[in-house]
Amino acid sequence: MQIAVIEFARNVCGLEDANSGEFNLDSPHRVIDIMKEQEKITQRGGTMRLGAYPCKVIQNTKMRSLYNTSEISERHRHRYEFNNKYREIMTKKGLVISGVSPDDTLVEAVELSDNRFFVGVQFHPEFKSRPNKPHPLFLGLIKAALKQE
Image 1 (cartoon, rainbow, N blue to C red):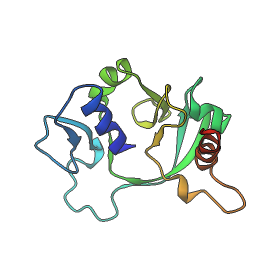
Image 2 (cartoon, rainbow, N blue to C red; image 1 turned 90 degrees about the vertical axis):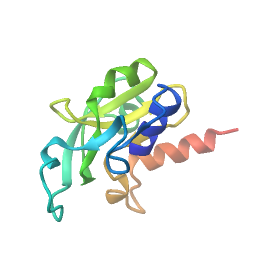
Image 3 (cartoon, rainbow, N blue to C red; image 1 turned 90 degrees about the horizontal axis):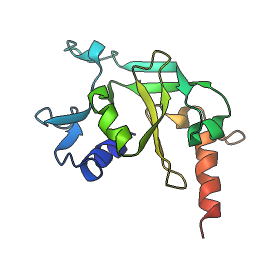
Image 4 (cartoon, rainbow, N blue to C red; image 1 turned 180 degrees about the vertical axis):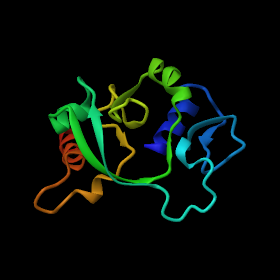
């Protein structure tokens, strides 16, 4: 999701210098940035957002149709997040925010409605996928690819 958001900011929103604070602290448009609770931490070992967290799945999105529920629990392993200062400009330009934390402060999933399957997530679906029970996102991607002409 993070790289998708950077590219959307650059190529759709016109923020040519958009980047992640992880890659470039001097970027004037850090659309992905360190989580607030991580800012003052200097010893990074064992401090990231790690484990299962709930996510509200927004109605009328690909995410909602894939999960078929309003709340999910997914596993995370990161310390950088979508920068909410850019939420308005990106949604006005067509980025769909399709999953958020229960308090609506963290963007967990984004998508493009005009694309057969463009979903980016902050969590790691591979952590919950099994050979006999594929993750809904992987299943959705494969189904969309099979429909491709």
